[in-house]
Length: 387
Image (tube, rainbow, N blue to C red):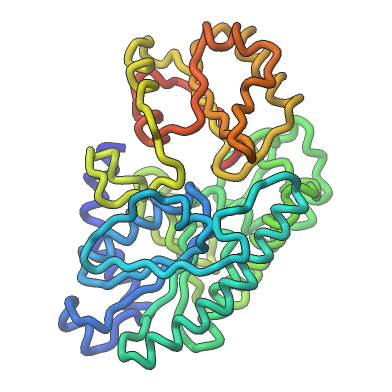
């Protein structure tokens, strides 16, 4: 990643060319990158995993003299203790009807939350774009993240170019694209058990390497499946669709080029600047009260620690938590396990029957800086919900 970050410095001309080709700049603006009319709106889903990649990408754009406004719902903004204060970067939060009070109690509840973000966000972004145009500070381009495909439709209504920022690897995008286009029947009719899946341009992959919902309709992920499908259909209907991807040529050269209908541009790795000991462009939805987990990691052997984290919203059942706990005990490895607090601030780990044994073997925290943990030499395994 350190080499990748070095390479990243040379991506600014690539980003510039990309936006020039997609009408971010007018003819006048290309002569002067500092022109105030160069202004991008970035819309992201209110989840921790999307905030910092978008902030890092914003930094790249600001370095080109492009103004950036980030928008997402108050469910994210209300939880961020400290927003970056950087010239050229502004924020435009909107109400999603929950405004930070959303608590995930069921899949149906999350469906309602997602629908509320979409409903409120569509109206807000539409009005924001029109309002800025009337003020003489129009947005030249709209960028949106995964599961925010409706933002592209809003931009289309107002005739503003928009681009998907895919924060996952290019290979993952390729798989989804095949799944919802020419290879839809192939996936549906596939016996997923221990099968080798062969897709054009990709190396042979085992079925266990894929998310389960690419083979079967899984109710708990139905909202995400529909969103990704709509996104792929939107791109398929465009003449020259382009996607910004959180990757780089040295890592996924072929994966960035195998889709004939979509031009993918690797602009990553968009990881928090914490990696370079710079906290300017980062924001955390949960305040980290203590970093004693770093001291704990420092005491462990290289590559020995299992890191477990399931994101900002994903919930696991008490039964699954219990199974993970017993699995860790049988494994015998030291571990760092992130278990978020419950709706009323309850410590969910207190429900584990094997809590005492687990605390002797590893460490349980309510939140941590994921980038700092993943770059630590003692971490050798990452158990996550996605990505």
